[in-house]
Length: 166
Image 1 (cartoon, rainbow, N blue to C red):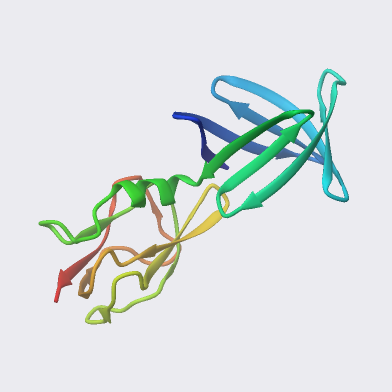
Image 2: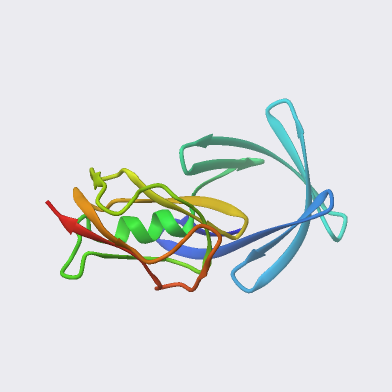
């Protein structure tokens, strides 16, 4: 799974892969193999070189507070679809075409042609990186055209459906 980690004013690409009972984490351009064990409110992180780190972890929404010894880090972890939506506009724009934000497979189409939808209502579900992401309506509108079907694979930027503003 690919995320963005925000620490101070820096955005760092973060990729996490499960490898059996361990994880591979790519921070920037560096891969780290790690095993995490939870014991009460503490976590033990064992790195591939045998180094063990004891840390406290608290999560509120997308913000993770990590305390190691006397140092505390506040890191925001954001999934790519939420980040792109946050930077995007809350309206339909000139075309009204809803596009795939990343490549994936259409898991479900939640609307039909002619459906009236409110801003935030689910339009379809895009499965990307083993996660299902519901694509919401950016504004109130009527579904004029649906360009995809459940089970289809789409590229990032592909037209998914047309929403006419009401």
